[in-house]
Length: 294
Length: 257
Image 1 (cartoon, rainbow over the protein chains, first blue to last red):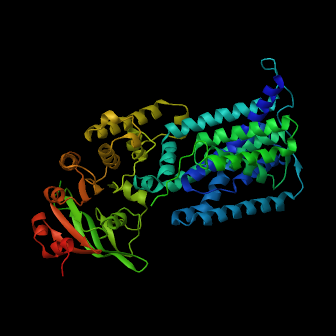
Image 2 (image 1 turned 180 degrees about the horizontal axis):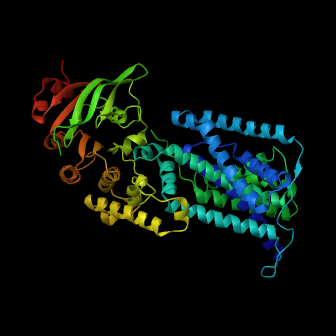
Image 3 (image 1 turned 60 degrees about the vertical axis):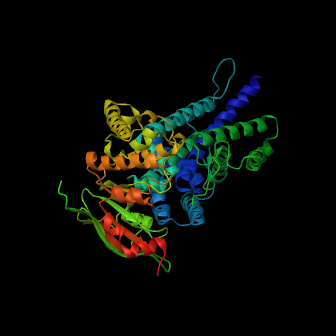
């Protein structure tokens, strides 16, 4: 039983990282119907920023973390303004946005490969690798910190979207962007802000993830980003609680698969859940049946 | 209020989609304080004209001036901010949000607090939110739907949704309100009530009104002046009496030579 709870905690820890990344996919999709395939690479950029700040520039942790968060959020805005903004305001086909996103992804990967070379770099974890005692079980400190930080952020995001004017504008724009514009909302700024929040959450996810898996290389965003995207789809893309639930489900499923000794099948389980979900409820757990607007 | 001041001027306004001329060389103006009707058969280009006034479509030729300034080419949200608000033919509320949130959303630009003040729930945030909450409640009350303030928009009955859309449009303190078929789907009692509301909006809130409507008795009894569009061209402009007796209008509606 203790082993089960321990694995559950590991699963929730991995799952909350997926959830943080999935939120970025889901919120952006909710407003501009763009699947931002460069979102996984944002994680990569945040890790290299963290690496540069800590290992190369030798900055203290309490400077490196805020710096990484800010730079990653700014990168999100820059990508949105340079790559997507004009396409979105011209109202191009969704496929053009998707291809652009793939282009941005390739651009980021190649740029970082050019700067840091393709070899993986060792990243110095800042949390100690020890376990803590909690109601008779001994989970790792890293897992517990990851879960707590993620939960706090998800709660903050939920309140933000419910209570603030920008949050309300985000909800309105995701329901009907052109009506929101006609009500005096500058949706272009709302979209940029959404990218900033998504990138910020991805940066937190990246920092937490590479505490436990401290090897970074320019293509590392791919699999993590893909699984988070799967989490967003399982939860119902466009839905904030959906992204959270989808992430946690995937993380727990993956940890449980590993714990019963089938670790080489963990990816298969993740994508298997996706296939089952798409067959049974294609709109996802919290998704609505999509009505095409005429 | 200066009754003869021109608030909105439509100059040589034209738009074509591909080869189709949806609106061609339309000219008219609306005085401050008028209730003005825009009628015409289905497909005449009425909603297209609304979309050009509000910046959704960019005219191919001509322009729209509001309060003496050209608005064509400005962004939709900027046009809303300078005082033109609208409702939609098919209701487009934010369905998942409460009635009051729908109205408060359109007052977004009025609140003046930053992110930090909001995170820490400072008195500034609380008082700014309270200010627009009170203003939004007043508008709901004005429209007679205050009791539904906490309902999700999608759960309101049809007639109340129409009223909520008008309340949301009024939230940005417009000088000009565009109503796109406000009486569609209403019974005669509701239509009569709507006419009173429209008059009340003009009297109490000093808002000029331009409306599209198919219900002729509603338009003829409510509007002071009316223009008629047919196949994208303006075929008549005058008082309800003049419009009723205009042979071109009769031909457009009943078919003719």
